[in-house]
Image 1 (cartoon, helix red, strand yellow):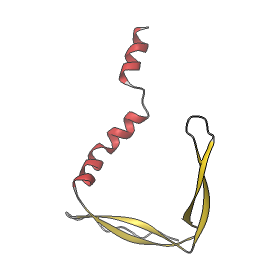
Image 2 (cartoon, helix red, strand yellow; image 1 turned 135 degrees about the vertical axis):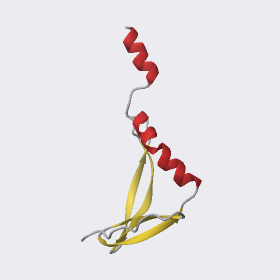
Image 3 (cartoon, one colour; image 1 turned 30 degrees about the horizontal axis):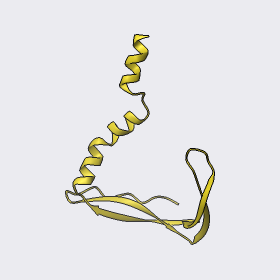
Image 4 (cartoon, one colour; image 1 turned 120 degrees about the vertical axis):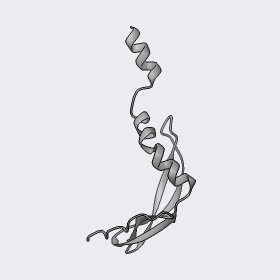
Amino acid sequence: MKKPELPKDTDDHHFYLLPVYDHYKKVKIIDRCECCNKKTGEHFEERGVKIVGYKVGSVKKDLNYHLERRYAKRATGTIFEEPLLINRIKGKK
């Protein structure tokens, strides 16, 4: 199945693809503690099983859209790099 082409963004709207599923299935998700990986509970979630097609969705551009576009690369770059303070400490050793 081929994904449809997105229309170009306008001044007011941003376009994106939404998958359309054949059917949904209830799946049991086990919740675990982040520090010790011990089971803390469980909940059910509906998840799509088979992608049938794609639907084009649109969102009105607002302040959050512009901030995310501006700072997304900078934020992801700092997540995967070592902090500046640690680099300075290592350099002094």
